[in-house]
Length: 237
Image (tube, rainbow, N blue to C red; front, side, top):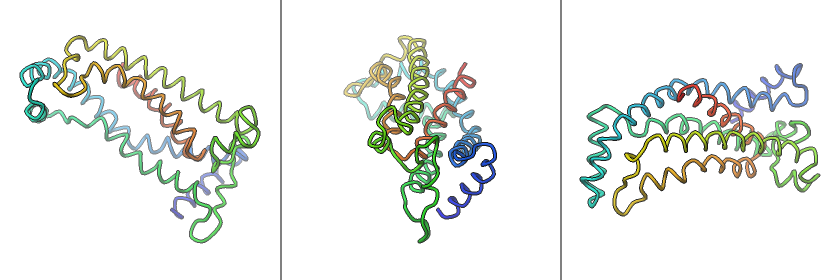
């Protein structure tokens, strides 16, 4: 972690002439963009996989009908179909999973008061007056919702809400376009229709994450979420 801390400090020093006191925050945004660039090829592969899975929907509907009373047989048949068509069923999860180490690294870095036995100087950095190691509860306790730090969080919440609304609309439209094929589900399990109604609203849970993690980690989440929205608009026209 000390190596990563030095990297953030050095990047912040490079950005200081442009961003001054908010240079460390800018370094985190730049770091997030770099991580997203690294996983972008996987995102493109996931988009191709999703299109391939969409093409399998008629066959999947037939399997659900055939094995509607045998969930275990249905699971095996679905896996066999994906293997036969060479469509990885979970490829879309890889980009998100590979970003988790970077998120937890930032979370731990800005939650620790010491690094390698020395004081964590990164905690002294701020974004427009809001400490990067602080949380929304700290902002509320020192200045309230409309205080300096509170306004920073309001800006982040606004960005997340807008992105979540766009994602929700796209997800609902995609589910509606899937038509009746996506409605059937295995007996005893939540059907795709139920999942399709709930899944679009999952993006709004990002608001909870932003509210409870250190501001540095919240910046990572907001930047990555905004990147995902733009990326999906390009890869899933």
